[in-house]
Image (cartoon, rainbow, N blue to C red):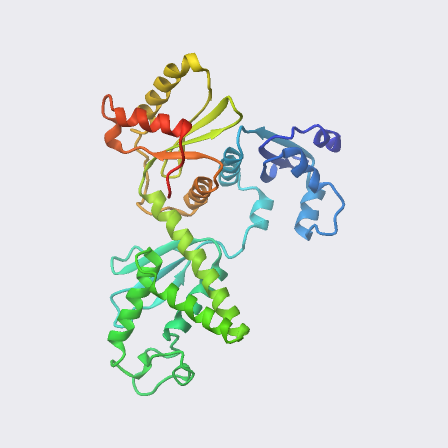
Length: 361
């Protein structure tokens, strides 16, 4: 019965909800090709993990929700997981959960730490949330080693720590002499995390290239791995910064030569989506409809408890940001001033969106 149902699934994009014998949704997934993706669970494969095998043994029924685009499938999956909290989605998720980077600026030697929750302290800078705790830890250790601030006893005043003798500490443990140097390093790290200072990244890249040129591949590999972890942090900060700007984003994806789908997005919310047909003699009518919906939905105020993205919001924000970068869509940013009465710039932006090219992020 179940295999027969899977056999007749459509080969289109969408979301699948796997249910147990009591009708409870135990797993939610998305796919560009539903039939191929769901069938993969029922193929005997030695590559299946123990969790996949256990999931497969508990599936009694499958429900699907079709979408016009893969982007919609991603967003719908995210919505279902957040609302239903299926057992196997939790089991398969990284157990480390979310983490934040905090810097306590009111200390003589501002401490860089990882915390499971954002800080509300006015004297503490906070970056994140980040999904992979291990990657964050690796990036911070790499930065501290490179900047030589990996001190093992920063509160001691009488003697230097072991890492000082290893060249990993500038001497914060020996007294106040290193305070100004340490502050400069911290400011460089803050600039790196908020996207205003790439100097540390460039220095680490140069060191990696130098080690590679000297055939010191172990050192070069260490720099490469640290840089990969740092780039992960920087990309996440770009996602957060872009989303918190609350821009009015109009996205268009062509479904075929004659049809496209329009999405109107603010922050991490899809406010409106609609399919349109490219019928030449109805172009003006279509243009009027798009303008009307932009005026209606982009004036919507998105309520939020905090100016910072919450843990659930970051998932949707990442999907939207990745979609804009994917090359699968065209998009444009609509300034609030363009929504005031009749505005020729708004009409020009819509025309360019339909036939033009996407803007850089």
